[in-house]
Length: 203
Length: 203
DNA sequence: ATACTATTGGCACCCGGTGTCGATGGAAAG
DNA sequence: CTTTCCATCGACACCGGGTGCCAATAGTAT
Image (cartoon, rainbow over the protein chains, first blue to last red):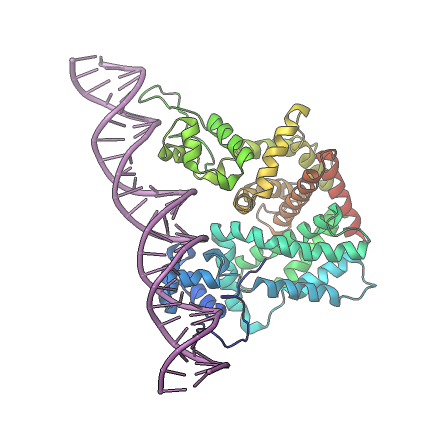
């Protein structure tokens, strides 16, 4: 289940022709174009041309045009996994999830403007909204596995999977709200989402 | 935001050439093929041929191949809206949502086998999982609008949108579990999802 | 018979994505 | 320096989904 890499992963073996670019630079070039012209108004050929490579080669760095904006999703998954693992064992599950999700979505101030653009692209382009559903699946599983362990159930149990779905829902809702107003703070919105759900669900 | 219709909607005006099929029959023919051969192994041309129409005409009944399996989604939306409206005003929001979501997903026994096949197709075909994300948006909004009214906030407020996301998450999780075991009851799974979330979130 | 009109379906075309295969260019071995 | 090796590259052909265009079709109304 590889996300983004480049031909045959990055073995440091220096044999064969050198790669002509990296997934990272290709990703930046593509995202730049998406932000400027809109995802649907940029063809893969446009990106390839801007990067000075062939159209065919693009698909050796990204499995699809849709996969470009998320970049290295596996890294995000690892990040989320790490946040969850870092939560002390004596914290209740609700708080553990809340803390981890908030922490996962904390970014240094200088990255915020770029994050806004990236998420604007990801959450307002129908094609990408759809495609992202496939990526979210893996993220939910990371949450589900954690919740399962804490609650003493299987990682594929209904309870664990539902918690994964709910955490994702709270995150997405926070992002959508966040995109509506420059002044809002993402972490606060996520926290508010968790607390709102606690309030409504507790009656 | 039309989903499925057919050329120029169904005005009963009997002028011009008669339509050669309906979205409903076309949908049944297509779904049958998807279930038999798998979504990715059926081309639009296959469906058109099986229905005795041209490929071009298919796209006048469904905006895309992906839209076929959901059928008349607007009808589902209306159904969900009706369930929510039918819940007495003195019921707490949590219970109102739970009741409505459960009721929305209640089907007569004879439809269950077919529903299983349809949902199997919708939830296990990556292309359709992705595309469905676009449809879910409208469903969540129906939930959000209801929650907003009950809670005295705007339909686009963060709280209302989050409740929409969470209800959807609980539903999807229940469906995935349901598909794993023939003997499970969908309504019970959804109920369990709501109660589990109440339990975990209340601490 | 004629006029009118919505639907149809064929055609050309765009774009994303894939299989194939020869060309490329760089490191290591002779 | 030349040869060998080989991963990457890029061109080409091809497939399938989706769209604009337009003439042909098949009904009703006059």
